[in-house]
Image (cartoon, rainbow, N blue to C red; front, side):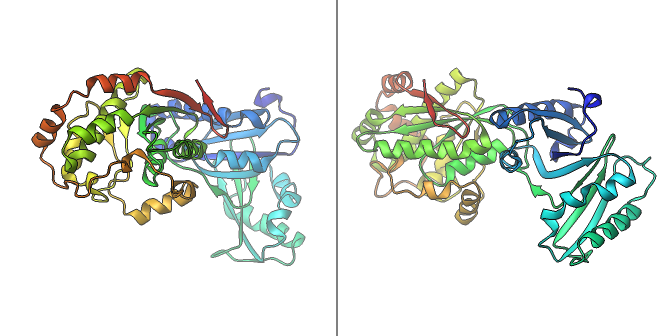
Length: 406
């Protein structure tokens, strides 16, 4: 159905306001197209929708009368690229409709409020009434219908917004915040090293917010790590998939490598060499999956393997960029984000991960790269690396669904 064929009835619609996308110049349409695809994918199980975009806004109109708009709004607030969301009533673009049609629609928002104000935005500058006139007249109508209200232009309980757009006018109460950022898929693919801790899910969320399509890799070391530990990590991937979309999940068997490390490398360098081997395995899987970077949850100085010297030694083993979005954050800041994206409670479940297996008592905090390389070269890890890559298990973690094993 085209816009011209849409019947002239009152319709509730969701306005998805773009943020940074609006600044993309000649590339803006590319970003918008990706965002529309992401929204359609996210709403696939919620009914049929018409969508069109204009003036840095995506209009999402439900075709079915029984669409649960609260569920739709909850889905859309997790979609990167949208900064504001409004459930709005679409009315004819004339003053009579603007002043009368929305009054019943606004009842739910206004009946429990004490104060309100009206704002108006005229994207169509040819509309005959100016913004102050629209605000004054609609405000008067609202006071007539809701006499318990009073006007407060500084700090109202509810702000009623009138938007005069190209073909229609839209009236809504307060908007809600969207996820912001850039649409998933506009910044390439990255491989997230996903442990069971607090930091790595946050790192994945932060890179996805910048448009990176995530895959995840996890290293397990049975019997030193349990199945519950792996299930915990899969749960974390499911939780960030609400923002990041479907995630390809790679689970690497790492036991033999860790035992060989324990038996053949200096204890104080164990963690650094382990991370270098993890990076090597992850890079080889990146080559298969067309991922251009690695992503970790490291924060400068948080543990011995995250000192500047240790990171230098780790990065020396990497052929592709390693992004560390948490590198300059305090732990409290990382925890705040983890709580916001609902991964914190899962992250603190007391299940082990392979990074804590055979932890040295006195790890080297200022390692020298030549010493690390010499220690690693003293044992031939290559056959084990190849075996770990070959035996990596692959599954798809669907957004909002159970893991699908491949």
